[in-house]
Image: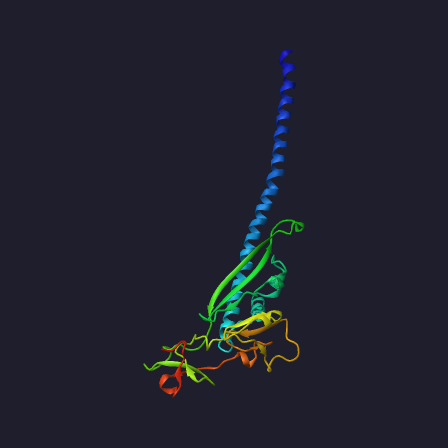
Length: 265
């Protein structure tokens, strides 16, 4: 009799143990599966972030090469065209469908510039990427990519089958020759400044800036282009007043011209 009384009790304990184990597994699964899915989602986001960054960097290289080729005609970078070239290289559709905040319009290359001293184009792209969180949190990660590309500014003295005679540089209307191609008299340092601040600015000689008759007709734009040695402000980067043709000649062919006071010995 005592044996038959114990059997049901043990059976109940076993059922309770099995049920408890199943409940424990269910709770663990409920906790682990969301964490696992979030980890997978985070990995996918990391791969997509790296993919879009690589695409933008490749687009910057293509745009910088184009800007380097155009620098021989105008020693400055048209940041609007540079940004358009980056988007064109990456693909506007690819950017609009990516996790890039704002899509193709979310790319900002306004800080890209060309150094008048080294002749290098410093390409800068700033953008934000959405993080894998609910949209109402508005959490983003900001990125800034930079690279430098040497602009094509002519042939060096050692290029080609040049003789040992020294090569110097001249412009169409110059009365002197220059031994350094990067001389500030040859390389115009073009700046884009707000028109509202122009009245308080002065050029290298202390003079005011006056409007260019070639490209400023009527009212000026919100921003204008000036140079440190110039006396005019311009509405267009392609204005002939901002261009300078430079010739490489042998020093013996400069005639009676004297050397530049800044770069010639």
